[in-house]
Length: 173
Ligand SMILES: CC(C)(COP(=O)(O)OP(=O)(O)OC[C@H]1O[C@@H](n2cnc3c(N)ncnc32)[C@H](O)[C@@H]1OP(=O)(O)O)[C@@H](O)C(=O)NCCC(=O)NCCS
Image 1: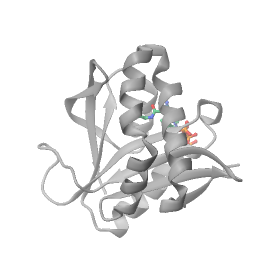
Image 2 (image 1 turned 90 degrees about the vertical axis):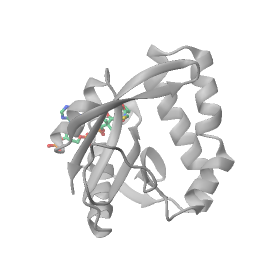
Image 3 (image 1 turned 180 degrees about the vertical axis):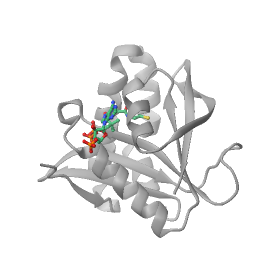
Image 4 (image 1 turned 30 degrees about the vertical axis):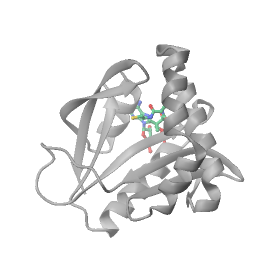
C-alpha cells in the first residue's frame, strides 16, 4: 500500500529540504562522479540558506516533501521561471528535481510526487510540464515515459568540473 503523504514545504522546512536534497543527490550520483565534483555542486545547490530563499520565493518555486510518517523519503522541486525552445506555445512548468531515497524506490514516493506535480500544473493551467534527465539515467527515463513524457531535445548539465548531458522531456498537462 502507498502510505506516502505529500507535504508542500514551507520556509520552516528548509533544513529538511536541504538535507533530503543533498542526501538523495549524493546517493544517486556518487557511483558515477568524483567526490570533488559532487561536493562543488552540492555546496551551491543545497546550501540551506539558498533553499530557504527558494522556498520563500513561492511564485517561482514549490518544494514537495514525500513523507512516510515523520520521515522525508523523497522530494520534488517545481520551477516556473525557465522554459526551452522546443517546448511549444503556452506556459510551462518544470520539474527541476524529483528524488526518492534508494531504500524507498518502488514504494510509491515517485508516483505520489509526480501526481502532485501534475495536479499543481493542472490547477495553475500550464499547458506543458517539462524536465531534464541525465541521458544515462535509464530508470528515471523509463519512469517519466510511463507518465507520458517524451524526449524533445538535450542540454548540458554542469556538475562541478564535469559536463554531462541531459535529455529534455515534456508532456502536455
Ligand atoms: C525516478 C524515481 C523518482 C521513481 O520513484 P519511485 O518511488 O521508485 O517510483 P514509484 O514506486 O512511485 O513508481 C511509480 C510508478 O512508476 C513505475 N516505475 C517506477 N520506476 C520505473 C521504471 N524504472 N520503469 C518503468 N516504470 C517505473 C512503477 O511501477 C509505478 O507504477 P504503478 O503505479 O503502475 O505501480 C526514483 O527511482 C528515484 O528517486 N531515482 C533516483 C533519483 C533520480 O534519478 N531522480 C531523477 C533525476 S532527473
